[in-house]
Image (cartoon, rainbow, N blue to C red; front, side, top):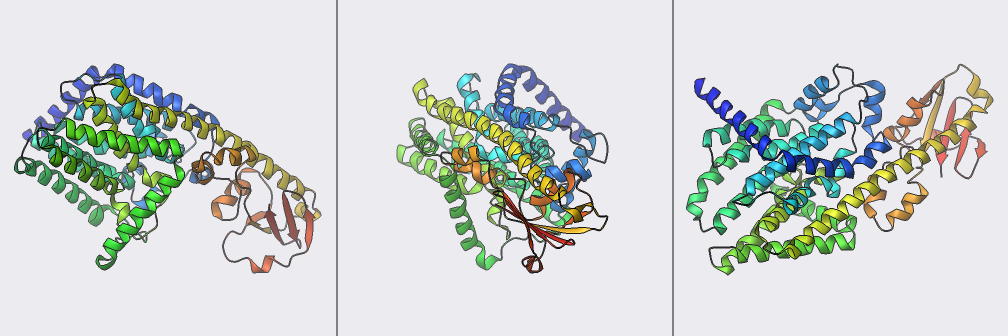
Length: 488
């Protein structure tokens, strides 16, 4: 017990030293994140299940075995019934991401000081588009960000104390698993790049094996604890051994098809340039032969490009949401951080800095697009509510079943933006459409009396209802008991 106390004391003192050493860099990175996500915060857009949590106050994270999120949310919201306390959760997410980014810079720092170029590299963890699928959630975002910090934190001790490294690895990986499992690729990804650093510096493979063995053991022990003791049944399972490799390959290809489609041409070119510069610098800074270094660099990129998606490569359920691909942000960041420490000339560093700038601009674009969508959503729902209010049978106390079909889609201005940014049309939730969440805002937030929205089933019995109203935005059909709203 005394040894455990000493290890915890060492961990505490290390954290305190780092907080004092990097407070300026932390504040700069935090300011960048707060600026980038200011438009998202200002938009105050309730994204999918944010609507449900704000209305009903439920947690719901245990459906995905997110025990830590469930517990922390109760403390953050100061009660079991959750209320909308934004922008506090999103600000907390920015603080956590800034702390994780600075720790990442410290882990890979040799004898350099952490300056402007390093901070712009670390900023990619939060600014690259896949984090937008996290920060947009007003209730979930700090706990998803915590999964990143938890994946980075143990590596502060990988050369200091093996006991501290093992202790923090197991504890933090369990935190990661019980906050957001999409971050499951970050820990092995960082370990991979640290092994590259050692091999490139002339350290033999034999000497790196203990670190590989310890980190791999901690990783699989932690995932095993989660899988067998903490994971609740929810229909998600690992793909059968027979189909494991084909499934991994098909999902890997699908992920990179999505990236290529969502990223603009300048983004793709800058990402390609970062990979090329990274490989060049691995060769240039190696103590081994250039051919060996090039092989190691290519192998790191290839393995890292798969590891970044973590367990989502193996699970049976489809997982193509933007936030599920967040690990790709970290892969980009690790290559950019490597460049920031090893490139001699500033011109080389402008490549990843240009990408950081592109992503910062896009984050502001995304936030302002959410504000446009909120205005358009309220306008379309108001039109429907107004037309319903003029129907005589809506004034009766009898319950009416309402079925919604179609989708209002993105606001007109967003459609135009989507010609440049494909990511926008895919990621912006319209807020008014068929389905459970599509009808939730209309059903719960506009106080329309005596209605029940029917979102399940085929709805065949609604297709022959008499037409009551036909406008350029929607049609309303009904018989006084059943109502069908078709959105145009």
